[in-house]
Image (cartoon, rainbow, N blue to C red; front, side, top):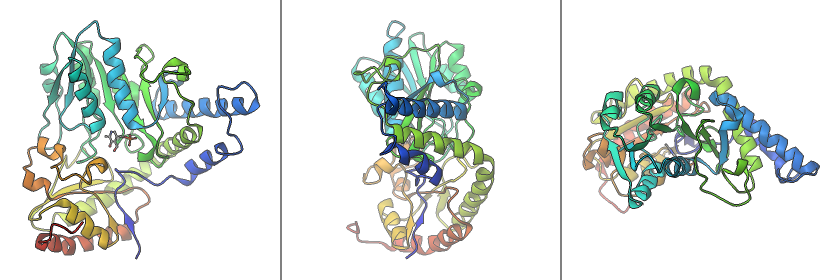
Length: 386
Ligand SMILES: Cc1ncc(COP(=O)(O)O)c(C=O)c1O
């Protein structure tokens, strides 16, 4: 059976260009970039070239890009590091109820360290307003962290405006751009953000590579210490193949963004329009301000969204209920709860996320399969399907 991969918010296949950029660094050019002989210097050249490429794609300076092991590490670092460096100012952080667990669990840790956390509740579409943010800012607020785009419902948030609201009160602004980078234009200067996290495997780069943009003027405390790599800010021998792959993938996404966005938006809208023809299927997230390839729904009348995912899998369609990390959890996705959906709605959460590799024929197949699968989902009695 031909498989249709439609869970690109969970991860994406590595592009040819990214793979070609990575391969030489496993065996031929395998040196440690800290070494002074030629192998090391070759690796160093690759590292710095990749840094410049990532910086260019984000509108940053090379000196503002720090490589990490992925989005989770970048998010953890932004939160812990910024708070530590602003210790003297206060102990209050503002974020949102719909952040990824990489942010929410970092905030839990800060709460345990005596910080107060205000989590803003978005509207039904997943939006937060600058006025809402400003109202929550206090004299002792040290950090605001709001995601650029939500992984579960695809909503794109007004980061430029939210950042301006934080800056009006001289508060550092971090955004988790893991779902956005490579998919919508990101320019750190235009957005005005101080800190921004990205992850390579979400844009056809390899898993285990990511980056944190930190504005030049901002000094955040290192969290991983050791050999002093990344100018002493993030120790550990650099993942040269991963970093080279990430730079190539991000550059490729930036080059093709306009055409990919136009095509993907059309495919996504076909998917959404067809799904919404099925009674009891509702779109989640913002209908307009949403990621180009992202379609998400709640399907009424089922027992457990895992059944829906399993039934789609039987038809060769790989989709998910929301966050990849929560796929095996029976808990109603916290994002849908924050958006005001009840536990019943969360039991029918469905996320179908496309990439430029998906064809029109694949989208038509998904549209054809959905009514059939949803009917079976609703008739499903056996909770032990998994
Ligand atoms: C919004 C968001 N932030 C952070 C992460 C974590 O990124 P990584 O898988 O690179 O650790 C993810 C991954 O699903 C995500 O969707």
